[in-house]
Image (tube, rainbow, N blue to C red; front, top):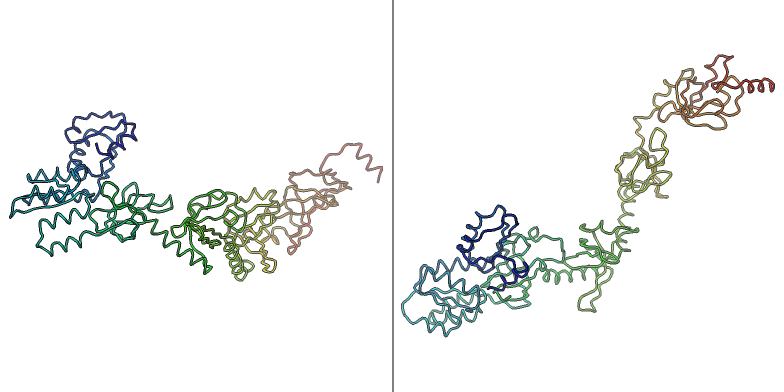
Length: 532
């Protein structure tokens, strides 16, 4: 049994169903209550796999398929069929124990009876004795190039052009080499297959594609793209070349980061995770540490909000004394400079009456601060509504987007005064008509003072009834005659449009002999008469 199959079965606690042929597939009766997945050995015969898949497809309602047959293996098997159909002898070069080589032999044997599996040049000379025959030759993915060359040389010693062509075709690879390849495909699991011009394709495991755990290789590369890759291993035991993209990116990345550090230029990095004491950022493919104190110009309690976003950073430390350089970055100074630049632009451009969009950044007892794009302005509680506002939180919430009007800006003090009030809804616009002297108005008692009572005539418009204008008699305290929430009628006696003040009188609407609004006890009346 192939090591791949043994390994997969082990991960299934040895409960996997192992099928080698269409006949075995037909005999298999699956439990349809269970969920099934089909995984194929990377060197399995493509045609046999298709036959098995065709048989199994009728027995499953929902079968998840993972076709992991190596593209190089499938292509070589296809080529072997075409060659075997047109030759007298078919030579398969490779280890007799190699699954990849055995599959090539079995496929070729179907179409060419004189198919020979040869492990060395000696086997080749032993099996090929006839002359004037057409010979086809292929090799398992794990077959060393030297054996292929020896075989071709033995069959074509006099054909130098052919030998030169073989030499040019068999690209030489070695561990640690950086080569250019062309992307063949990207699997659902993120494995990238790359054509290197070698006798077998290379594969980039997802873990070797990028240091960013969230990156999707399919979104970065596509079939046909040319990329530089690092050769980790020429032969992984199955003839595949193991490659790494992140190692190539790292070499280039270190150079660019070092240059940015020396030239004091900012770099762009993507936050990939939170770690103890800060953030881990990917800059040019290199993991860089950002301390929590350097994340912003102010304290940030929840660092997770930065994950997945890109920002500019300054390289604060680049220590190359160790094998792997220690790199520390930060954006505190950058953020502060950005804020100062934005502040300067805003103060240069805004003027009284401008309408701006912003976001509520902080709420306090006396108002709310609004971020206008790097600069905060203040909406005083008195500027949140034409009506009465008891609590800021009744009107605004942190993070809420608002449109505000600029009341004033002081660049020297760095202060901007804002208002939420809509000028078009200003209740004082028609006050000259609605509250002309002599008009009778209706309102609600909203506040008492020692000198009188304030009457709300509408949202944003209050009038004052002086204590002397409450009743036809002497009043000690407004609350002796009025109560909060009480609705009363009053006459406008004064109107100050500039100061937005209205004086009212209840007394002038009362008959001269009418008592106060509240019915008083006879004892109190007697006391008042005696005092008079």
